[in-house]
Length: 295
Image (tube, rainbow, N blue to C red; front, side):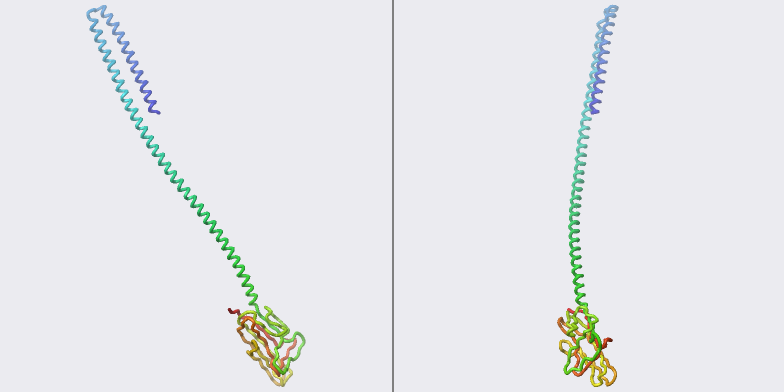
């Protein structure tokens, strides 16, 4: 735009100069003509030669002026052509730069969209992972609660212990009898797990495990009668406690660890011909408890 303005200004300047030169040429012609008239009047023989010289000078002047204009126009045309080429080069360079910038922007936009999609995928994956973790946590929590409850139940099942003495109240002798009898320890101190039956005097194993059993016997006032009893397992004699003397009191005790299956029974049998004594001091007792369960 600036190039075209410069071109118009130059053309106006050249036109103005040409017009001025033409006007000056015409004025000089008029002056020359007047002078030639005066000379003709004063010097008639020289008038034609002077007019010819003036005409020749004017033609040469005009000829030189139009040549300068053509040269200036050619220079101006060359300048305009050069400016047009420069403008086209600038336009081409600008288009290339715009194309490059647009491509770079598209690349960055694609990269950002890719990052955004990756971020969305990552967020979705994290959400899925978090949900899975929450599910696992809930499952573990439920499993843990179930396991704890099961362990508590197992522990409750494994909490097996009892201890009892013969007489619930008062005192006296039991025996002698003509046959062996099962002693019933009715004064129960402890019966955790209710595995001992104070009515029958029999302990029944609720689960497989190792059990510890102890019993004690006490004798008094029967110089000819011993105090003898034994721990029985499923009808088989296991250990014996025996005491006998002619005067005063006697006592004896024994214990054993037994491996019992579920349903095995353990009890104390008083021998035939023997007797034991008990009173409020609980001299004669029978106790047992689970050491540990077995699979």
